[in-house]
Image 1 (cartoon, helix red, strand yellow):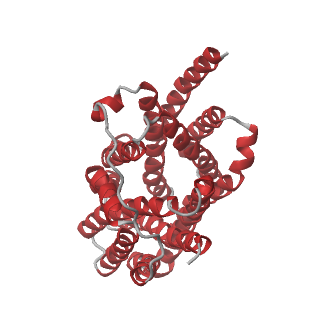
Image 2 (cartoon, rainbow, N blue to C red):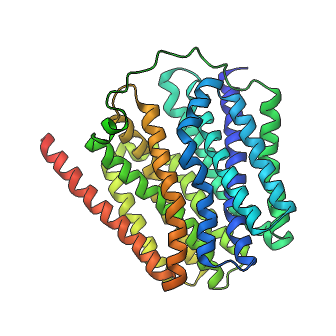
Amino acid sequence: MTDRIRLVLLFFFALLVTLSFSGLRMVAPLLAIDLGATPGTVGLLMSAFAILPALLSIRAGRWVDAAGATLPMSLCAALIAAGMLVLAFAPELPVAFAVNAVTGLAYIVFHLALTAAVGGIGEPSRRTANFTFITVANGIGVFVGPVVAGHSIDALGHAMSSGILSAGPALVGLVLGVMQVTRPRRTAQAPVRRAGGLRGLLRQRELVRILVIAGTLGISWDLYSVLVPVYGSQIGLSAGTIGNIMGAFGVAIFLVRLIMPFILRVLKEWQILLLSFALAAPVFIAFPLILNPWVLTSLTFLFGIAWGAVQPVITSLLYTATPPGRVGEVTGLRMSMHTSLQTVVPSLCGGISALVGMLPVFWATGAMLAGVGWISRHRWHRKRQAAL
C-alpha cells in the first residue's frame, strides 16, 4: 500500500469518527434537555466526555507507542460505535453519562493513534502538509456531524440519531480490523532523559504561557458547545436549526484551514493569535443578545474562523517552546490540562447559568478571551521590542 493511499484512508477514518463524535456531542445535550435535565445537569453531562481522558491521556499515549497505531484506532472506533448503539437502545440520562465518558476517552486515544500514524507517513518534509490534510477531515466532520444529528433528531428522534451516527466508526473499526493501513510500529528508541520531570516543564515560563493560551482557547469551544444548545432551546429553536448553527463552526474551520498557507505568507504567527482572540471575544458578548438563527449562525462561523486559524499556530508555538526530546510529554500534558478543565468548567458553567441566566456566562467567557488576548498582546510586543 502506497503512502498516498494510506493518507487518504486515514483522512476518511478521521472524517467518519469525528463526524460521529461531533454528532454525539449534539445528541447528548439535546437528549438530556428532552428528558427534563437542568442546564447544570447538561453541563455535567458534557463534562463526562473529559473525565477519563483527564486521568488516562498520558497512559494512553504510552499504549499507542507500545502497540502501534492500528490496534488502538480499531478498538477505539469500535468502542465509539458500541457506545452510540447502547445509547440508541437505552436513551436514558445515566446511560448518556456512561457513554459520554467512554466515548470521550476512545475519541482522544483514536486521535493520539491517528497522529502517530500520520507522522509515520512519508518524509519529514511532508509531515506538516500531511497533518494539515488530516485537519481538513476533522473540520468537515465537525461541520457535518451536528447537522446530521440535528436533522435526524427532528425526523427520527434522539435514539435513532445515535444509531445512525454509530455507522461511521463501526465501519472504521471493521476496516482497520482486517487491514494493515498504518505502518508497523518502529523499534522503540532509548528513552529521553526528562530532567526535572513535570516540575521542570512548569518552570519553563514561555511554555506555561502558551499552555495557558491553548487552554483558554480549548475551553472556549467546550463552553460554546454547552451554551449554544441550551440557549437555542430556550429561545425555541428546533434541533435541526441548532445543528445548523453548530455546523457553521466546522465549515469555518474547513475553509480557514484551506487558506492557512496563504494567511501565513501575509501574517506572522503572533498576529494570527492576537487577531483570533480579537475575533472570538465579541462573539460571546453578542451571542446572548441575538434571537435570529441566521445571525447566530454567522457568529458561530466567525468563532470557527478564529478557533480554526489559531490552533495550528498554538501547536507551532508549543513545539518551539518545548525542550528537546519532550514533545510527546508536553502534548500529553496539554491534553491532560485541557480535559481536566473540560470536567469542571462545563458543569460549573451549566450550574451558574441555571442560577443567573445565560448572558453572564457568555459575557464572562468573552471577557476571559479578551483578557488573555490583551495579556498576550503585551507579551508579544515586549518580545518584538527585545528582538529589535
